[in-house]
Amino acid sequence: MQSTNFSGKVYFYCIPPDTPEKTGYPHTMICLGDGLKALGIDAYANVNYWRLAPDTEEYLFRHDPEITPDDCSIVVLNQDWFRVANKPFPQHLFHPNRKYITVYLDSDDGSKTHAYNPEFRQFDFIFKVCCNRYFKYPDNVRPWAQGISSRMLRELENIPPIQARKRQLLVNFREPHKIKHSVRRIVRKELLPQIDAALPVNNVIEGLDNFSTEPYHYMHWSQTGRRHSPGYFQSLKDYAACACFGGFFVTPVPRDPATATSRLLKKILSKLEWKSNRITDWDNWRYWESLAAGCVSVREDFDKYGFIIPVMPENWRHYIGIDLSNIKLAVDRIASEPEILEKISIEGRQWALENYSPVPTTLRFLNTVSEKL
Image (tube, rainbow, N blue to C red; front, side):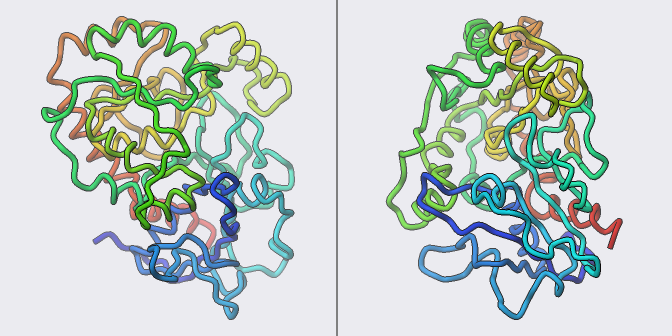
């Protein structure tokens, strides 16, 4: 079993769940909590958070009134503290005598997130998803990824081989009419009509309000903010491939995506449906869920569009990366190499589990943070 020399405690600031419609879902924080639990490391919090079973009061993040941030080695916040709860920084978080490391997990949507604000330079580390090598980030930012949680792994533990699946491309973006992401608009307009002959397209959309009344699934549907669906996970096991595109095309300059100029140009590109070789807001749960399901992930080419995560995938080995300016090249290869889907299904899943399931993700986190411990 993988292990670590870290022997401290980790403290999380959590937001209690509201109604399912108003509940945030701090996925990257959950993945860390899962990994800490597997490694036998205590995860404390300001409140009891993230129930592990519907019939017990066991929580992934445990509140103990005797344990404060000053009793811990690492203190973690994520974007829901500010975006969902609209709270100020916890009182005395950055007090001058602190001995703990402060970490902010930023998986928020948008080119300008809270992490760009000057006061966030106080954090020792900001782990940010959707990083791009073409962009400029503050010095305390480290590239991160959404990754795979224990909840996902439970649903995708037993998967069928590719031969037992429908040789079709699952498309289940929950925005079929007014598509928000400019990349997805291009995908629907240009890629899907071309790829259909080589990999037939099947639109299967699970609505947010489709939930199971079975206690375990209902618990997770509620505490993920309606983002848990057994039917969706079954679809990933039924199909050979899944469209995992997302994000917005942006211009080469400015290099800082948070500037007003950059955000205005992003809107212009989106409205005109122009493409570029830079994409922001590209990471999504669907990509990691499909990898864990052995459902071949079809999405933008990481290298072409500048995507950065701690351990990079290899195109045509772990996923199918599309150059949206040369769609025919990928379509022709899928058609001429039908056996390649099986290879990518197996190797993509293995790569994802080895690098982005909870334990390796948490070990990577601890190794990075230990630079300052």
